[in-house]
Amino acid sequence: MMKRSLKLKTAPTVVILANGTATTMLMLAKGTIPIVLMLVFAVLIFMLYVSPTTNRRHTYNGSDTAALEMEDKHIEQNDLYFDKLFIRHDSDRRTFLKGAIHFVWDTYLKYHSPNTLRSCVNGRFLVYSCTGGTVCGGLADRQRGIISAFLLALLSNRTFVVDMARPCELERFLDPNLYDWIKCKDYIRKLSSKDITTLNYHNERQEFKRLLSINNSNTELFNDTVVKIILNMCALPLFYSANLTAVRMPWLKLYTKIDLINIVYHILFRPGKKLLHDLRLVDQQIAKKHLHCAHIRIGKNPDIPNDPTFVQSRGFINTSTISSFFKRGTDRHTNLVFIAADASHVRKEMTARHEHVLQLNTSIVHIGFSRKTPEACGGFYSAILEQLVLTQCEQLVLTSSGFGSMAAYLRGISWGLFQYNSNRTNDVSLRNSVSEHTLEADMKSHGFFIRY
Image 1: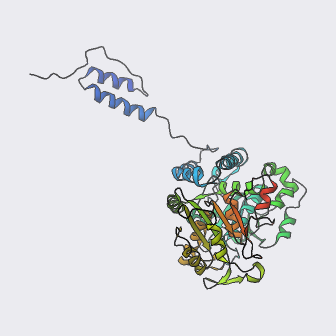
Image 2: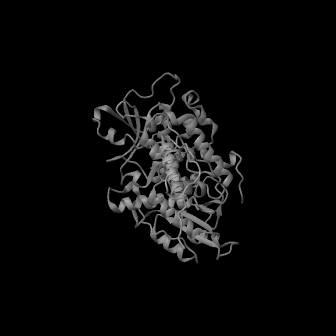
Image 3: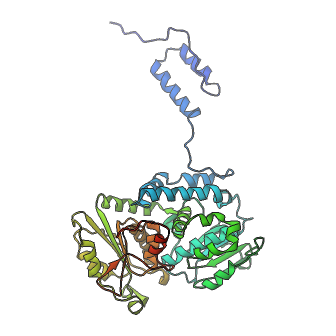
């Protein structure tokens, strides 16, 4: 039996697609090509001409394609971080802070950011500097300094740049999130020193306060094109009280200190590819377990011989007390314990006491005492990773440390946050003191729910 091919017998139909493709379709309709092939061709033409481009989360002013491409970068990974890992244990808090981040960005910062700067040549910059022989401190010192320097850049209407090269480049581990803080870094590095003013406010709180005490809103804070600043303090209280803030940054007072640390940090940073990969592995290990964590800072020890001795100023830390606290009233089969410490023997002792332990195999380095070596760079990465893991903890016990306190701020909630009391070596209690390095009372004063 002879098979007959299917041909179009009806009058040809004209499908209007785009840019003259109607003619092409008309020609196809008159021929003998099977309908299936014609439909495939039509779909391809539709995808080529009509299908809308991928939606971007933010639209920048101007036509800086590099900025637009940067915004699309790591969109999948970025969603993993901000939709799950960010403020992991309080979805309401996560929703509020995500909204605040984008509100501040879209309303006040987007059109004054380097993302829309076509050329660095005509810019005016404030640079957080940690290079060469600069005394920068540890990770928490640098984080506090960056947040304060960023606000100072906004207050002085300058483009903000982070130039951190000790012990290696910060952008190896953290990407710009919304604000591109590395765009003009290479341009600034090529400038002559006569074009740059460097101001050192490391441990100089009163000097920094005087800088912000200008009452005339028309006064320029700096005259030079490029100002490099060395800073290690969280100066948010000083910004709150400065007269210039009310005029130039009124939005600042809409948020508490806790909110602002999260807002500024996440406007600037998101985890880089390697960091996010490791955080994903941590998330898989946590699964449905209860992650209980401690950050134990003892000071001078064989791993960090140049560190100060803390026993007299901060007291002796009985690590068995913290282990007992984790085991109290819980199911050991559903608990997972993570210990971040500045001494390998402390980490070894603590992990030996627990059945289920999250181990990252990270190196112990104090980056404030480190030179530019591969080992120090690895320690820098370890510090960033460990701090972000501490933000994932259902229970977090802290000893006295800026590193741990910054982890608590980025964790974003006071629920499950505890302070080891070195004056009573058998006690772990909720944090209840107020200083630049503590969190609990600050949260309580702003109406956060505290669970004992």
